Length: 186
Image (cartoon, rainbow, N blue to C red):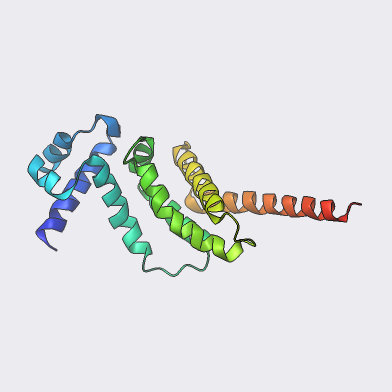
């Protein structure tokens, strides 16, 4: 492992440790560096700011791993996301609290968009406004995941995914039923 990766992992470990103890807004670059005995120069050599570090953690721990996966469907992909967040719950509850420019939520949304769009291509019956559906489903899943992570106690990922499937499936059945009723009435 290169020195650069070792340094980045040390900074990431420090950030994760600190986010387990205090809100993101209270964590400074100085705190991160002190936690792992590195200097600020080392931090800024590798990351623009603490937001960049949080996004790097997500990218290296999750995104690099899933890029090698071939998912049968979107539910397996979503289950992997939820399992990862569940295992790192304290860190991501804190990460989702950050708002504004460079926030984790914006980064997560940008990463999730292409995956959602890819799966929507398989189920959408129209080519009209695909970005609307992409944004709608991405936002819906982000809000659902964030709310689920904050539950106390937080139900296991498999139970959460089962509830999501039931919700989406029941809603789809209801909409199809209503559409069929509309077409059959004079």
